Length: 268
Length: 286
Image (tube, rainbow over all chains, first blue to last red; front, side, top):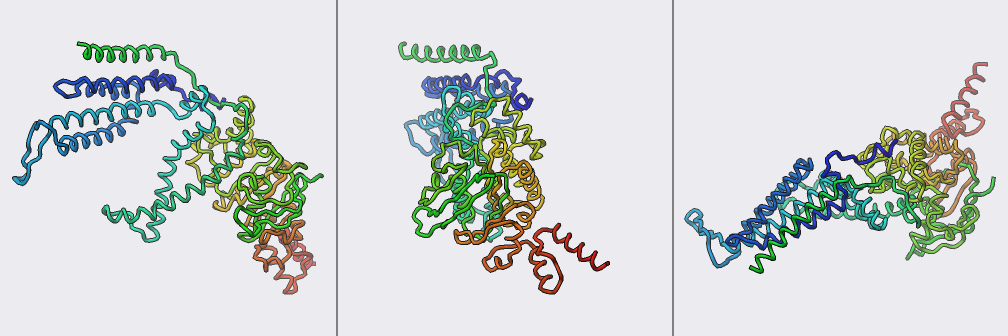
């Protein structure tokens, strides 16, 4: 049976969790990360930094570390950049260390700015990381199926799904356009100034072709009865895998502990 | 057989345009026949197709005078979805006919049936049958975006044919395909002809129109300048003056006649030309 063949079967129990359960995990984890960012040790968000460790561990347990590893690496690079810029360029009360560069000028690392930079950076790492875990462990059609079962309309689900698919398609189109423009003598490789000159001759055809393609795609959808009112059949349905209760209980316990801890610190 | 599509005094202007894209067209299309629509660029072929399918004026707006009737009912009076069930439309660009929300060809072909609420078991049966007919079974698990143009166009045809429309409007389906892709698409069109669907095909490849079409309509500047049986229309060399391409065999046949070769008629297909040549050679042999 084709339907069985095309079903998304996940052996990994965490990856196979119902999409809404995973969304709750994302939400609660993010809230906890923000709360932990306010619990500091000598001004440093140590607990928030430690809580980020949950993300790669979760990715490994879900079996998607290869998939999300690249994303986490890019986020780490961005976060490092934020920490350095914040810590060096934003002046604050205390200086941790002063570096003398080639006996020419001094670079100060400011304590409060660094602390704030760490909070910013690890906010990105925690929330971005858990979202990367969510999208890495959830197929688009699983998510849409779950959203539609909760009443999301077909137009909204179409916009969501097609946006995700189109990113990859647009990337391919832009490569084709760049090659075509290169063939016409537009320089697309080289330093920043050379590449910036190629920006408009590359972007304009991409945007215009996307707009004209959209018209035909709308008519294609209409030809396939997309706008027909009435109940639509779902070839594919996602169902819980039975581990949702354990997952929800775990994340709720974790959240309650963090919230209680925060409240106690306020009170005491 | 009754008229399945009718144009009654149809004139159509796109929005903000004073020049009609289609002028004073009166035509009837019989059920189960294959019609070829030819004409130079800008002659109104695509607008003609859009009028049949109802995209003009419902999507493109504009000003429609006269009536386009499908099974006796004006296109403007049809509900959303009813026209999709009655008329299948295939566009030029295979890429734009991918819905953009399905991961596999199987699901892509099933998409229309899902929209109409067809039961799951029936969807599976119909999609499997259509994939066999259109020879895309081996592509069933492929991502639609990763296929070649010919494969995408076959998948697009499959996803329309699976809805079992009585009328197929096909607008230059092979313009972006290589010869192999073209041949594979026309195999499917031939199968639809054999299944007695009413087919209205816009094509620049007149040799293929000559092979398959029962009748041909020639458009120029939005008007019908010639219509009739394929043999009669495509052997009319005066159409060359109107920028219309004619089959190679017709041009060769005309030249041969001018040079005194006693052909019975101007052939428009390779098989007709071969038949005439064999006849001549047999005469010579006698």
